[in-house]
Image 1 (tube, rainbow, N blue to C red):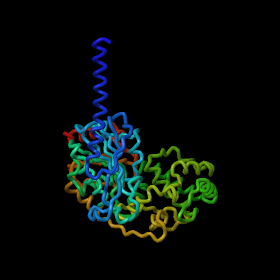
Image 2: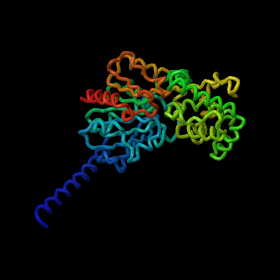
Image 3: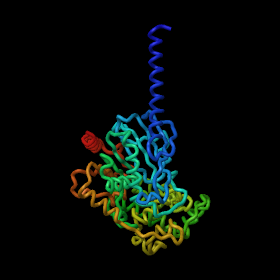
Image 4: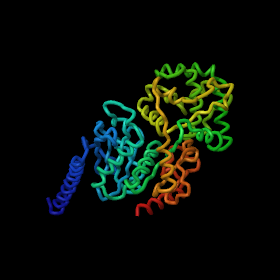
Amino acid sequence: MNKILRASLLILILVVTWQIALAQSLEDKIKSLPDIISVEKMEPNPFFKDALIIMVRQPLDHLKPDLGYFAQRVVLSSNGSEHPVVFITEGYGGDYGADPKYLNELCPLLNANQLFAEHRFFGKSVPDTINWNFLSVENSAADHHHLVQIFKPLFSRKWISTGISKGGETVLYHRALYPDDVDISVPYVAPLNFSTEEKRHDLFIRHKAGKASERRKVMNCQFELLKRKNSILPLFKEYCIEKKYIFRTEVSEIYDYWVLEYAFSLWQWGRPISEIPEPDSTDQTFFNYLIKVCPPEYFDIESGKPIFPFFVQALKQLGYYGYNPAPFKGIMELNSTKEYISKLFMPKGTEFIYNPAMSLHVKKYLEKDAKKILLIYGGNDPWTASSAVVHGNHNIVKIVQWHGSHRTRIGTLPAEQRRKVMRILENWMN
């Protein structure tokens, strides 16, 4: 073996050994941090060198830690401590965060590490005994504050918090309660509600989403589905039996909720208006279309179990959107949808008192004290009706993608808006 080949082989061995040592070193460092229960190596996304699934000890109630603890799932994907950290405050379960395919779009844009936190009481971050008193905005924000305290000594560069939808909401609550934890926040399509049955979303769907002609086509489809209820309902019942769906009210009533939810779902996810069946289409065509756009599993008890804690939060603090059956009076079985969340999603006898105090706190924070927050919304997304309001605070920026949906991201923005976002982020990072 000649000297050059031998030297090349030695360099390769040293590089591989260094990479292995670095990964072990990271794992050992994480294990030595406070409140770490377990660390498990996983295959990293190709963008990263290392990835770890970490279970972190969190108090059930941060104000009363003697009441007990639970384990919160966190996924760390790293290229080294010299890089900034994108901190993802997921609002639900976090299975996708533990998938090597997952890569938050901010990480390659900012050449950053990725710290993904599953929300308390979802997925694998569930205590042995459920007490809904501990599922609060305050405790969730304190969870994230605790994570920042744990990991920041290892990753001392810029921290950028981000989340989508309820995760974006979570970003805002965390930032309002612990404004110095991170340097920058990028919440996507994050609502800020002040009622369990907000009226703003319905008004948006009927007067602002899309073009007037498109809105008429959506409502005409709803009228057609209600006029044909007697002939389409058997198809609906058969489908629900086949899928083994169980509802908390009569199937006939669920049908009406299904028709109401359709409009919200269509605009939320940006479904093409061109797919709406023509008025002379068959019952089967209308049924197949609605099943595709708005599956009734949303109302099924079993299907809803993974996100059940969300409805608890909605009734307690987060709020939600309301339905409006008034335009369909005389043709719809439902006369009122008041308190529909409790009726459709809560076991009988379950009661929560809604308190908008935390949403109002965030609203005030955004108006006066917030800085370096980049809000991104879709122009046709009903959730934009309850979007965070800037109110002249020039230290935060709101970007709305024209005709965008709940899927709006930096990568979906038109070139001009995308360049503006990157200029803002680069300025804030520097």
